[in-house]
View 1 (tube, rainbow, N blue to C red):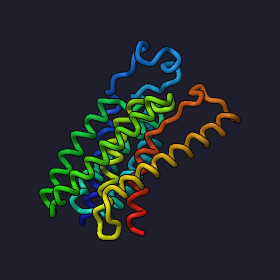
View 2: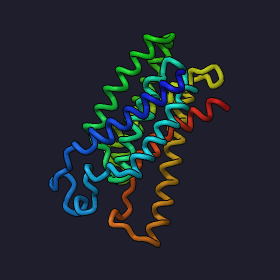
View 3: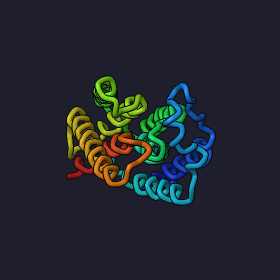
Length: 236
């Protein structure tokens, strides 16, 4: 029953944002990103294609099912991560942009979903929840520093990193994998390694097939994948 609910909520959120929110997003201006970026960036309204819709739905369904392996009190935020944030990352993959308007909606939904599942299940100890928030803050700080020191990250990645840290840290409260801090470190390590692999793969591919994006690529998928890697490791 819970798995079916997770799939339904995740798919519903993903579809809502892909079909309704994304086409209505405000396009960046020339002053914000420059003419060269606007020349190659797909418009948000053009992202709603049958192929992308199918991929997003399949991803949300699979992740909505897998999210029930996380601690019960955290299911709500995992469902948002599986649905709404999956759509946000799909936008990033297509445009290298993480629109702040969609990100804010993901945050608001996460707060509501977390409060709902905490109220409906056994709430975690206050220190555990505080630890997850601390990991989120540390994750944000780490990627803020990377953003300051490197041109390969956008500020949208810094915002997304907060969710990466929090969601990944929740896997540390299971009996199999104790330690919120350890789970948070596993999440950040996984996201960083995946990001490095994406950068290497992008560089190698574009040496043979040059892209108008140059060396720019979407880092959001790596940040989104970090908590899933931590969840899989927590079950080992």
